[in-house]
Length: 123
Image (cartoon, rainbow, N blue to C red):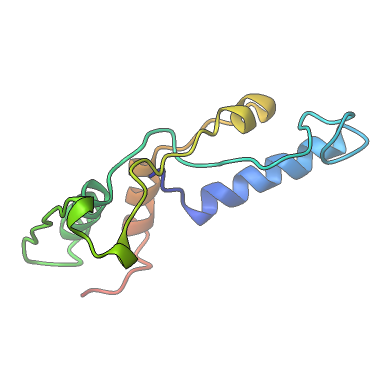
């Protein structure tokens, strides 16, 4: 997966809207972006388990939790059918980032900013 913060996604939307001001339309033949569906995610993929481990490590670093927590990975084939996940849930954001000259965010930096911001309750 390529997690992305709401702040980073909002900044991408602002870039899309700003690009439309320089052309006659937001999407289409007179814009930097043709019509279509675009992916936007962080610059590097991460597993759900590694994301959770990083989140807990940051929570401990910023004194939001005091205990060590263990994340155990469960192989996808051991999940019930209703909880099956795709083998590869990564997004390719290359088209959007190239067209708008966007710097794709690092999920680690974005997660660190969020946890450090103090918007999470102590748990």
